[in-house]
Structures are given as C-alpha cells and as structure tokens.
Length: 145
Image (cartoon, rainbow, N blue to C red; front, side):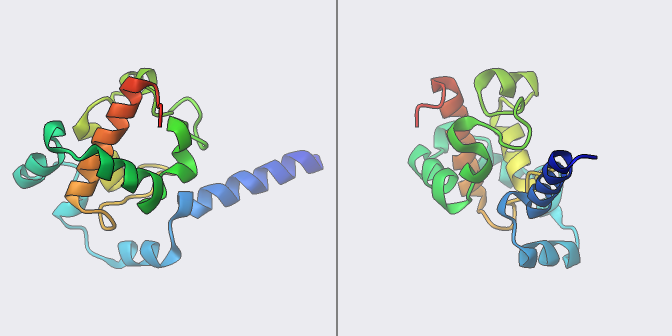
C-alpha cells in the first residue's frame, strides 16, 4: 500500500473508533450495565406517549439538543452525514432508509447503530422526542437551520 492509502485507512479507523464523540467512560458504563427495557428495540407504552407524539414536541428544545447538547452536529451538521454520506438527514434519504418517522428516528437516537452512538442513557425521552421532531421538521424544510 502506498502512504496515502495507509494514512486514509488510519484516519477512517480513528474516526470510527471515536464513535462520533462518544466518551470512553460512557462506553465502559454501557458495556458493564445490564440490558434493560431502555435499550430494548420495542418501546414501552409510556415511551410511545412521550417519544412518538410529534405534536407534543418542542422544536426549539430539539434544535438546542441537536446543535449543542448532544453534539449531533459533529457528524450531522446541516443534515449531512460525515461517516456515510448517502445516509444523510435529508427527506429523500430518510424515506429511502425508512427513517422518516418519529419512531424510527427516536429508536436510532436512543439505541444507536454502527458508528452512531446510543443516546438513550444521556438524553431524556422528551429530549429524544424533541430531536426526532426537529430532524423531521428540518428534513421537510431542506435543512434551513
């Protein structure tokens, strides 16, 4: 392999290991903690009431959490995806990958997947609901914020 390929490989591996900003302490806590209903892929009735009601969501809070508190912009600034470019947060990609609902986005935020870290232990159900509503709102508007 030439030097450029080796450096590119090192960069990609380092980025994936960093988990889009996940701290080592959080990873250790999650790996040692027993699995609970919180990490289940089937939300409870109470979670459905909190998370999936878009009308109850606070878009301003969702924006605040997305932009600053949860560090979503490290990978998703402007609705993009810096890890897997075609899986951005635009309306077309959300529809293509069946992520165009409150339930789907909330599950992804709560449980994570691949390079996407799980935020179920870091964000409240209300914050996850608000972020999901914010993502859908911005996708419909073409990511104006």
